[in-house]
Amino acid sequence: QLQLEESGGGLVQAGGSLRLSCAASGRPSSIFDMGWFRQVPGMERALVARITWNSGRTYYVDSVKGRFTISRDSAKNTLYLQMSSLEPEDTATYYCASRAVGRTSFEFWGQGTQVTVSS
Figure 1 (cartoon, rainbow, N blue to C red):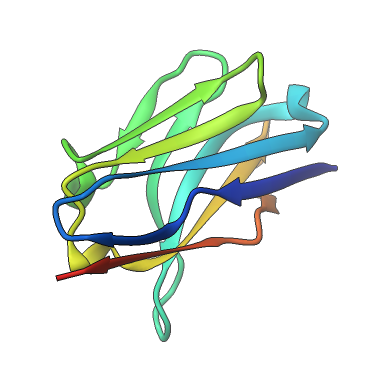
Figure 2: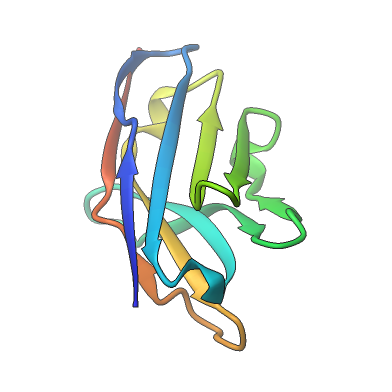
């Protein structure tokens, strides 16, 4: 079992920045990769970025490339998402999730943190 807890959401004006954090506890040694997802009401949860835990290899969806940076601190078992040049379209509930070695789906999820970008 792995527990994930996000923090760092809030209200920000367009063009501003926020940093989300996701603290992992339980069995972080089982993590293969972690991701940030976001969801708006009426829409499916969608991947924003992911990072391979050991290598640090990253992936971003096109809409956030150049604006968001995913990173991790292995010593602190913490995942981050630095968000810059925020747009109203980035308004969503953001979730972190983890996937273990050999798994095809992300298994463990945080409770979500709200990000609201005002125009």
